[in-house]
Amino acid sequence: MSNELQRLQEWYVSQCDGDWEHTYGVTIETLDNPGWSLRIELADTDLETAAFLEISIERSDADWVHCKVESFVFHGHGGAENLNELLGIFLDWAKNEGTK
Image (cartoon, rainbow, N blue to C red; front, side):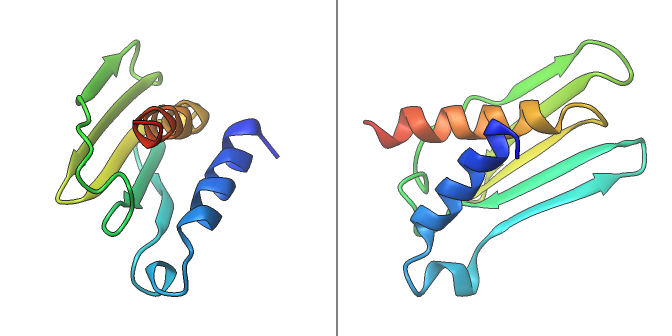
């Protein structure tokens, strides 16, 4: 299991309080261009009101990431080989915001 996947699993488990996991969650899907879509619901977490500076990186047609928070949801999209990077962006932000 990648380090980022392990970290995401730990973050998810830390949110599970008997209520949150029944309403909110994490979704990872593929895109047809090809790429990845990452959606993490932040309502009722410590990140619900945390500021996130939108990220847009275009290295090439296949190597790109776009991340933003909108309506209490983290949205990450990236190229077919950028899933690990998307997870890292979210998890580093979550770690930094969680220590404030």
